Image (cartoon, rainbow, N blue to C red; front, side, top):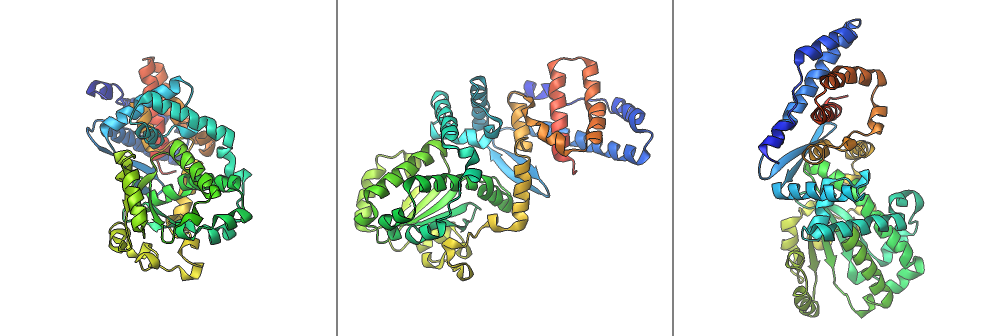
Length: 420
């Protein structure tokens, strides 16, 4: 964004005029008058800080405020500009539901198609259509994977702890997978539904919990695949179909969610195959995958603290009180205090966080950032007073669309920055 554009959306409201109007409206209630004056000052202070943050160049940090904590979000200026342009493309084509109007989601799809807008837009449209047909948005209400405990016996997997940068660690013990027994407990279709449900849970609970715990934005995982004992028995037709289907879902509808993968206990045969396959992969993708033999422990400990790593991988964790590490669900997402904040964020997700408001300012300046749900949360009388004090004077000036922009930013900052 140019300096001129930044300056064009700076908020300029007369303190005297708003003070006079406040006095006229609530002079009958002095305690309320004092509180309102304090709220207005906080709103102006928030607006000033927002405008100042928009002037930064290069990579910038965005504090996504949630109750009692700030989440750091470092953004590249070029990527941010690309996301803003991509957002406009999606909006113009009617492909931007509020649920998916998210900076990081759009950035992941752009990265997956190397910032080719047309290819990324097609990928995005396919994702929306798939979610509608698969029933992804209601999968928590419509589906329950009651056979999970039995499935874990023949397909050991799960999230356990976080890496040193706060990302969730996902583990699979592929050498212990028994496809023929697995199919007696569940079906490929049901397991795929469970797989999608767990991806949705990661975005709804695990990534937000890790972000709060690490105080920085997180939306990728560190994965450990243990291939010890992997043989042809692990690659029956059922297993191949299952893996192929999961890979398509992961790559097409949840792209760019892998930070790095460690394949451990890889034998000579696996390494030989990998050296061939690696040349067929995108260099960026292959750089995330590390194929290790039996002496992998030190590499894992470079990325993951011993307290977060199962003992059988060289760590110190056993989760003996929970039936083992892969059944413990260990991580920030199991902390009640953190999950309380996550649920608070979820209840306000439709409106957008401070970072989303900044995206709206630097993008199309749409009213989407302020949804009706938020108005229902606020005290109606209090909101009416604030609208009368902060908004109506702007309309009276009749300066056109720029006034509307000022109003959006003021109300957004008011809602998100004032401690209600």
